[in-house]
Length: 455
Image (cartoon, rainbow, N blue to C red):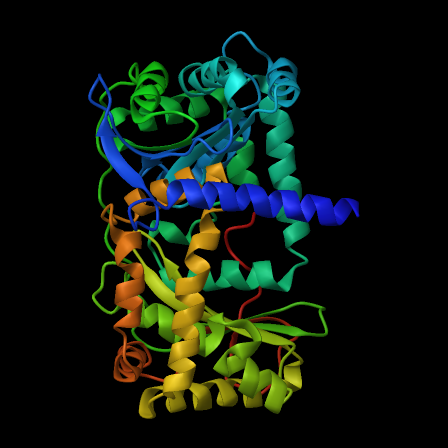
């Protein structure tokens, strides 16, 4: 009975949020504003719950800028931002967060440094004060740095027993080549050990500025109230410099097959092809193609053919990846070593079918229905509203991108899906294939004796 009541309450709250944010036939009632000090932000007003949410990001401030000998700098900064700031040491900072139901966290990706906050409205003054302190006066005390450093090192060491993690590290090294993306965004053991408090303070000084700042807010506040909050937190930041652009990733010119053997009895296989960006005219057809190929779970072509019909894998899926300087699609599977050759041949058979035959109108209709129907489910919490708004800005999306989504998806034809498949899978042979775990003999894989980006 308790579970049923909880589910009903959650559904009621989600419905209340959706009814609030779906206005004027818009998917999400999101708008752009400018604060009194000139800061631009996107806001979703939602008075269904007394909750406020804030997402912010600094563009070009992720691990891509880590010094080669201090790989993991952005990661360690993100881990330690909430471990003491201003007058509060780590214990007091965390205690104030927990005692007041304030959810504050930071994260570093390759391209961006991000932060997010969710707070009950009655605790907003304290919450915004703590965000301000974390951004402007992080303490980076030795004890906190040491604790977070060791946690990251233990994570790296424990990950070395995970074939999936090793496969991703190996794929990054081979596919990205000499691009900064090759570096381990989570840090290396030697890099983390070399980082000092001065390095971390320098990271904040060099990266946290208005020219890199992107902001989104949501919840129980007007746009004007959000602007006042934003100015309190961010107006004191320096203007700073914009990030320097990097070159796009240049994929290997010839197909490569690389393997790293471990004592695992099973094999993880990753395959990768260059793909298209989110601003490509074929993006919506690409999204549908991926869902049909391997993004739709047990309804996908890969799962149906390779797993269900042929029994060659425990699971297989495809996933588009979009980064600032690289766009690609991966197909990943886990299997026994003796099945790698027939499994990869089966994958290529599915790709050949996708590129040479048009899918049925029923399959296309089902994919469209899922993609369109599941869109509102992304907005089930106040935090998800500001999270969507920040993601759209970082992707360079217009304000009405969500409003156009259904029409653009609906306009995709079976010929469009085939055409975009032909664009991406011009060669059925992956640009890079990697294996970790058990490695079969006589399959022309180049064996490496170590995986870079760890030590």
